Length: 80
Image (cartoon, rainbow, N blue to C red; front, side, top):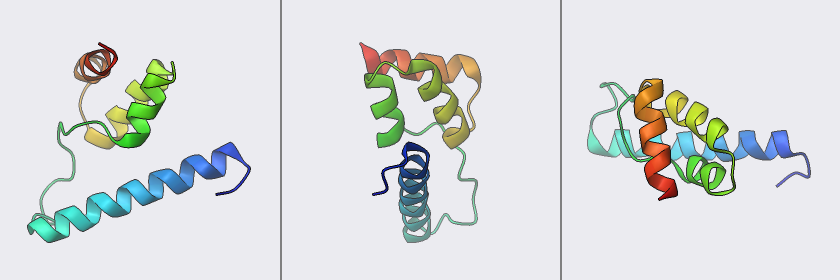
């Protein structure tokens, strides 16, 4: 990994998206919507557990396509 936090963030995000695509292709659902209310990614969990709940909510919304209320509920549940 690079020493630049922004680059590290992007590298993690790309790796997570590649994993997600591979799972969709494996399941045969690559033609369906990738947006769902799945569990938060490792990156989102890491953000939330390190005290960055607002950023975790933002990232989870981007990943899953859920609204603010659902994203906040998911992240709050992670922190309990």
